[in-house]
Length: 149
Image 1 (cartoon, rainbow, N blue to C red):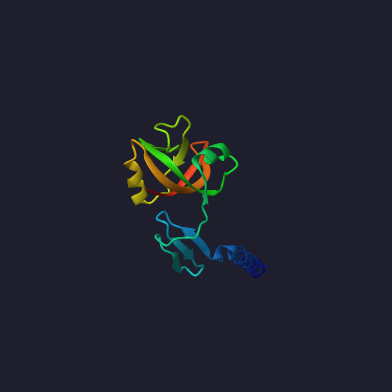
Image 2: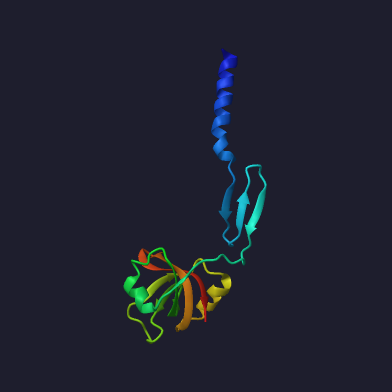
């Protein structure tokens, strides 16, 4: 009886451990993609500076403002006036001095180079941004992927 119970426990343990033996891919905070294998080894499958082909829809700032809720989840490219105010980033119309209805932007996923570039935009920079429309501080906004002057 004891041997049969041991066999049942051993069988159950083996069956329950199979899902834990699957390979898994993770993304590190610095942008590397790592394949974690079930045998304890790993492989770096994408380097931080290696580009991933992502389609960005080119859109005007006016269309972005008007359709921001409909564009949720889409990757966009837009020319805008970027203003960095004490950690907060907003996007406005590049043709106006100060936009009365700017769009919030999240710069946390930008490279250090891009973050340094926007820190210099405390008086506003006309810039092209790429990002994904999503939630920023509980509002519709843009999660920035890259910026270029």
